[in-house]
Image (cartoon, rainbow, N blue to C red; front, side, top):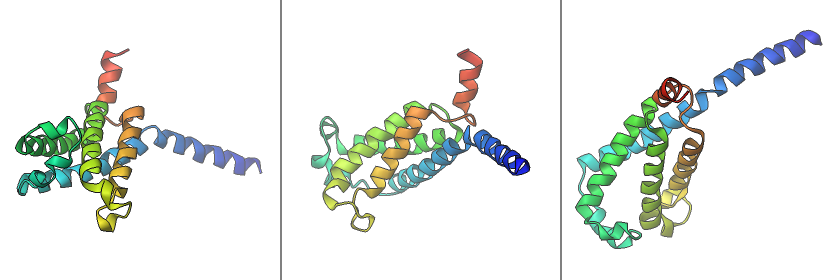
Length: 153
């Protein structure tokens, strides 16, 4: 019985050590992939924001559609790159939360929950991940963690 408890403690210790960086890395990589894909699609595609500009919430409805397209594209691309390495993670998460909110409000909200009907399920998942990263930070496997340890002691 003592041997079984000892093994359980070893496994728990290993999981605790993995838990110090792995969850945030996995969340960062997932959200980076999703926003990178969206950014590349916008970068290579036509500006369809003209069709939704009137649906954007204030103050985003005041921006020209071309400016909104540019900002969304580069926020997604730069945000994805930053998430991969864990740089400016909390700022990036906040920026992507705003972008996600605008997309949810203007494109997905009226379509219900289902992904198949372009509903708000994916924006909700992205929002929950981004809030987790905003609150917890990028984890130990990040540039932010290195900077914090070097300059914020």
